[in-house]
Amino acid sequence: MISFLYFLIALAILILVHEFGHFMVARIFNIKVLVFSIGFGKKLVRYIKGETEYAISIIPMGGYVKLLGESPDEEVAEEDRPRSFSHKPPYVRILVALAGPVFNVLLALIVFYFVSIIGYNVPSARVGNVADNMPAQAAGIQKGDIITGIDGQTITEFLDIASSIEKTHADTVKVKVDRNGTPVEFMVKPTTIQEKDIFGESFTRKILGIERSDEVITKRQSPLKAVPLSFYMTWEYSRITVVGVIKIIQGSISPKNIGGPVLIFQEASKRAKKGFGDFVLFFALISINLGVINLLPIPVLDGGHILFNAIEIVIRRRIPHRAQEIAQTVGLVILLLIMVFAFYNDFDRIFDFGKYIHGR
Image (cartoon, rainbow, N blue to C red; front, side, top):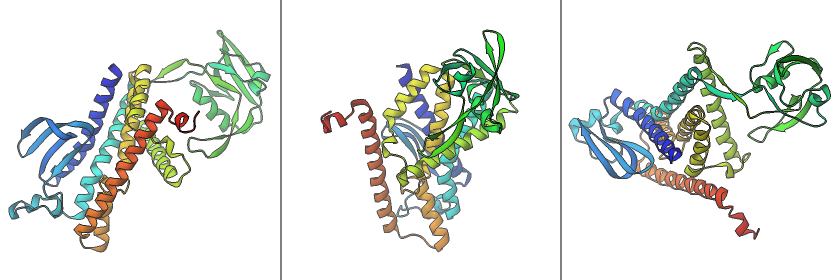
């Protein structure tokens, strides 16, 4: 129940921030905002302040900001045209559409910054297991040893081990460990293996042949050092999300990896059980995903609106309303198909439909 509550609160915040981005930039350019809604469908809660109606609607999977003159064929009174969305220059409409995804990415950046200061869990440098017939075993490293240094480089967490090995050009490295409070040194000759990354692409790396333990340590950064780290994490997660989307479109990654709300909820529940820090980091990752996916050039998404207005800038005239309607319909169908497919994948992970289809 607590996990579900976390999920709902996180979802509401993500939607609120996204729509607030559209709302703020619209207000900056003096566009009249008619409705600001969290959720779709029937309005459960309504509150009118000034010229804007604020609402919470029954379907929580999204939200919207309704602007005056948002539809090109909408009748707008002459005196209201200066505040109509469709009567603003294309670059203004692009900025309004771009604001939602940008606010989601900025939210992730802020979350990464504060989590870096408050503290986040990382695997400790304790050896959880030593693989058979591998360099670490041959050198004498044992389960429970804590790696403290490699070739003069200090090791504070498990991820430091791989980066330290890659940095050295020597065939043999000096590995320092703490064994029950006693410092011990080993000379280890790393072996090279070939693996596949999260996108299925092959790469080689040098390893000692050890596995991490379940032990974690909490890392904290100073407010100053947290700045570049938060920017790096935001950039890296954004890059991975963009590359992942491209790989799925190219067919390099199986569409089976596409997940919907059920998968997100399951993962959020796992993270919540690990601790608030893990859950918040996952929340930031989902915020980046929401921002990036909304930039896809699919009509009805922000990216589709950006594309239409960019074309308008290039051709220096309005795209025919009929063409926009057709594109919006096609975009809606594509989006619905993706959602249906995501839901299918979610339930397939739970119920394994293949065993019924193939008689397993």
